[in-house]
Length: 182
Length: 232
Image 1: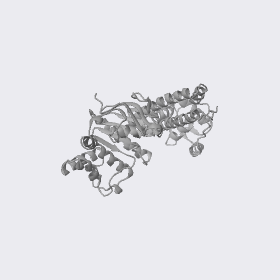
Image 2 (image 1 turned 90 degrees about the vertical axis):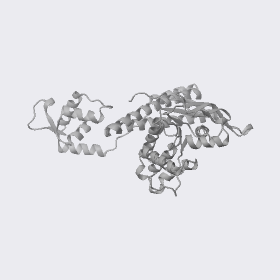
Image 3 (image 1 turned 180 degrees about the vertical axis):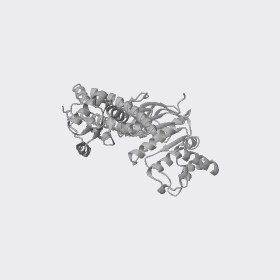
């Protein structure tokens, strides 16, 4: 996961202690990605082992009390990570897909029921995200806004897919010559 | 609370005999003051028909449409037109602002056509432009405004004066997503101020701004979200 790169990005702004890193990470992404402090210390230990961060010279021996700074190698690793697109694997083991296909075994109507129920639930989720977004906008909380925009985009994509599913299932059902392929 | 808009078992059939098309089939819907309801559904599901019936632009084959306590079916042509002009506002995808009139003149026009004095119509128009954050652009012509600003003028025109019902058909049109969002937030704010709103859209993201989302398929309401509570 990319916690280590997120920490590098924070350290790129100046030396920090583990607890400060946890706090700053959570101030940006914590609502969707809570981080425990132990995870921060173990990540820092790995980053130090790989030479991407170094303890501040006048620091304590104890990891928990030391401040770290980013190294040249750390900056390169950060730049490389930022410039590389995130790989997206084909997502074919989605539970909703399995559910729609399973309902289709019993016919078009049960499948349409599943599709519509899911669409309503996803729209309700989208409504809640939209409220959260208005709140984040009032607070001027940009990282939170970006997080909610991502959740909204995912929910929107699901609704669009469900619309397409319904149209396809309906087309399959109303075409007497054609059989719904499974 | 008394609904501003009430559709009671409304059906609309176009044509007759073998070529009859059932555009709406027993739709019931209530929209209260301050409430914004989004209507979604595939093309041909009856969204536009619903909006036309709600605004008195078309009459149902069976069923009742009540706006602001008045059953539209009981009104003659002249009274229906008056109710439409005074109580109902429309926002369409195509802005329909008159290019030769300034923003404030566009917004004042319905009032002036309705016999409200020029001075009062202008004062109401300025108040409506202020509500959409465009008081300082009142003297601009449509081609001097951005797409988002033009749509805000259209919203001001739709809520000016004593309007109680706002009907919007894909009001975000060709706006980019941030401008579209801003227009929708504004629409919602005008509804929260006490107007009842119906928003037809095919975009889930925009529908989610509404208090309730109603799904139409083949002229029927097939599902609707319950009022969203809390935040995620």
